[in-house]
Image (cartoon, rainbow, N blue to C red):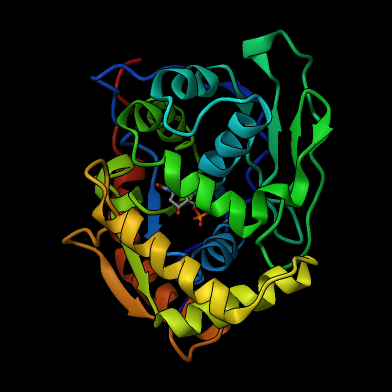
Length: 293
Ligand code: DC
């Protein structure tokens, strides 16, 4: 079954400044294979994406963390969640990096370039479920503060703003670097990496997702209850899928998988078959000559 070779682990990346995207944001490097994983909250995207990235030795992009970080920074700096120009400016001043290390982790580093801060390199490995990571803002560790339901809600509130999405687009596409990228979010297959040769769209009953989120959040010490989580999830589904800019939707060429009643290993096994099937196309992409810079 395993015709997808393991590559050596992707090297840690230096923080890269987010640049404001123009309307003509260039596409991701077509020579780099991308696996795009989308779906609503609590569906198991992060766990799956990190497992794939680890298995393949590819980079990992957790796009939701960008919106979560931005929402949290906005709140801390008194920027209103509907102030599109201020939010876009804030996004343009961040420095972030994501790496996958043993034990599963997205590490986010914020340098606060927009406000003259230092290099903020306090990221550290998170726990083993792939859901956490650490975030530093000019030396201040945000850590699990971006993992709360409130942070998810804030992220979902700023995410519909086209200026915010535009400000984050180029940076996300620039994460497509050799040997490959596994990216998860809402619009990875539809907007950010539309040319991906392997698109996965996960679904699950809202009740099953709420139960999963309950466990994840309780493990992190958050005080949550199932009924409230279910309400939050439904509200977020509604906001994420009904917005005009890059709504949550399944790309036409995506493989859909209902993860209700499946554990992480079963989801990985099912998706791995699709990765193997897509492997020749992923490899062909890799073999194509690089476009001139
Ligand atoms: O994946 P997540 O739950 O961490 O994402 C938090 C919010 O960020 C989500 O409700 C909507 C927004 N988001 C988005 O609009 N586009 C993405 N690619 C990822 C997240």
